[in-house]
Length: 247
Ligand code: ZN
Image 1 (cartoon, protein in one colour):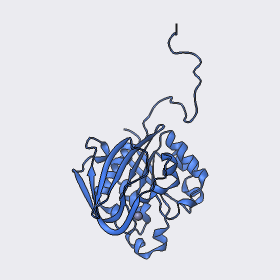
Image 2: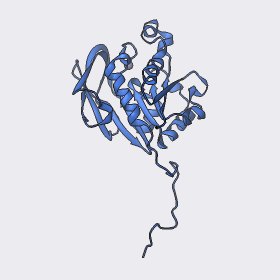
Image 3: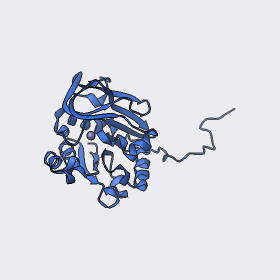
């Protein structure tokens, strides 16, 4: 039997404290809602962390015991300490998975991993989002159909300033006419990153079955691959002796 995948769901946890309307949708916070559907999946354990905890809840111990980190943030990206971002980046480069949700496109950690502005277009009128699957052989879309719809959401539109994704999983159409690369995979060092657009805080999107399914699938995809004896990144290695004789 393999060890469970250990997930930490990180949320800045500010909207839920400030807005009774949002607190009514997510009484235990967005992180609580996500951890509760993940925690009942076979082979997955889920904990939470948030901005106002010491070290934002991401101590060395928590990070070294996290296989996949999920990140939700919106209004307080700038309050995340750079030294914590440094540690999270180092863990990703050495194999930890990262799932970046919705407005976390502007989080420090996602921008650090992408190296671009990660800016986009947006509009908040509760329009429909049709998420088209563009990688039907990919494990993240296991169990979905050709597309699924989020009935009311915030529009995110192109141009989304990210590097060309290593794998494009979803492209969204929005009722107002825009399109968006709404599910994108990236490989960085030994780690895997999935950006997933659904999740505006004023709609109950993380209770939707297809959205939960994608996040569960993404956790399984992003979990570290066990490579024995692999060097620590970013260290280089001076290989003095060739493996085979060189004439
Ligand atoms: Zn939003």
